Image (cartoon, rainbow, N blue to C red; front, side, top):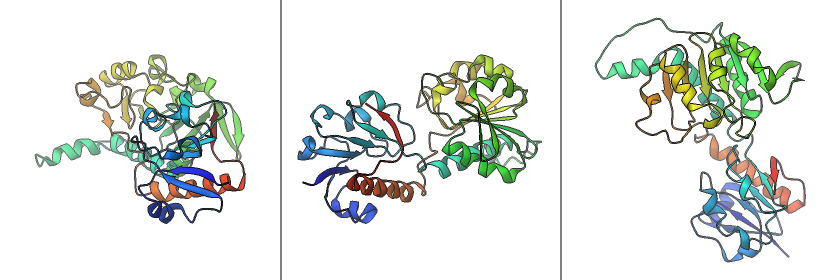
Length: 312
């Protein structure tokens, strides 16, 4: 008997061009999470969620998915799907897919803020030649909070910029000969950080990890770059701290998201905001399709799936 797999494409031809050919014993159906569940809802065993689709819509008929064994996401974040998992169903995220793009944006956000690129862009409309003195990444002290896949990718891109790097993860360890500090050391590390890259996933331990106390520990003119999840940084505390001009922020994620048009962060000098675009680049599809193809192959062969982050 074949195993039913739902893939997020509009047609089987499109799916096979992207991730095929399909292994023997796999029956692929297409699904875009728009109320278009195939008739095989009771037989689907592996579901690949459409990119950025609403989890509630993707799993609207999850109670009828009696054969479901695994859900594969195309995002690194998985906190919106985890509460919806049926008992025994594995949830796999897209670790590795977004590393390059998100790390690239993180460094760009730091450069844009440090080198006043947003100011110069606004000056173009009036033809203003407004030279000033800016901060370089060179010789700065960078703190990576969340030393996982994306954190390591940020590190690799920062190394040519001649920065001093400090790494923080959930627990202390030595990785590839490099010291990784535990999150419990964060308070001791922040006073020596010129740039803080926030890359942690969102969970109960990381919600408001960067709050008023942590922001107050940063040195004057420090820069907070958040490319993880918005609620990891306390928005009210960040708004208050940046309003004084003492610290700056570059944010690809916010809380709430989207940030309301009247929110003060939009108009605070020293704050640069991009609309959660770390992942969607030309690098996304080749990497995502390669992951999907490998997971389908593993599923067909009965091998363990990659990137299992939760089980219902």
